[in-house]
Image (cartoon, rainbow, N blue to C red; front, side, top):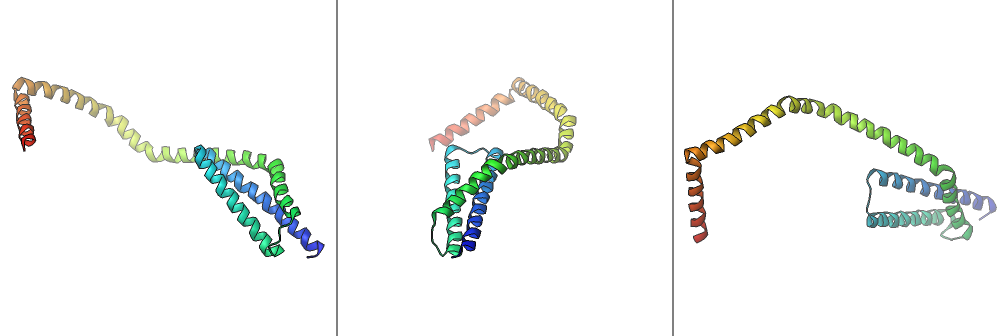
Amino acid sequence: MDIQGQGSLFLCCLLLGGGMGLVYDGMRLARRILPHGVWAVQIEDGLYWAAGALGGFEVLLKENHGEVRFFLLVAVFGGMGLYGTLASPLVMGVGEKVLKVIGKLVMLLLTIIFTPFRLVYLAFGRPVGNFVRFCGGKSKKHLQLCKVYVKIKKDTLRRDIRFLRR
């Protein structure tokens, strides 16, 4: 391979490292949306590095006939370092702002959807709840006064005893 081919391969590996950094920033943003446990983070990182290794091997296999050269590994890690130093703070800042805007839009949409249900609950929920509490408390007292409640309890007890004897 001539020097021009090696230079283009170096740039390709540099871009691969930058792309890996961008993917990892996407994973970091996803972790901020849905926090993960320690084990889940470790598994995600393992899958990330396995996919990165497969991607790097794919580039080396196609472009360099499978030969691993030290300067290509330096290019991948250099691309990751350059991305992490120069672009990652910008990407994370913009990503967090975009996530905040998306979160606010989702909350607005949910508010629009659930407002009619909330209004119905506010209009009828309290009166219906008060009526149920009023009737519930009074009906038990009326049944006890009429001795119907005691009869119901007595019949239930007899049925349970018959069931247990079987």
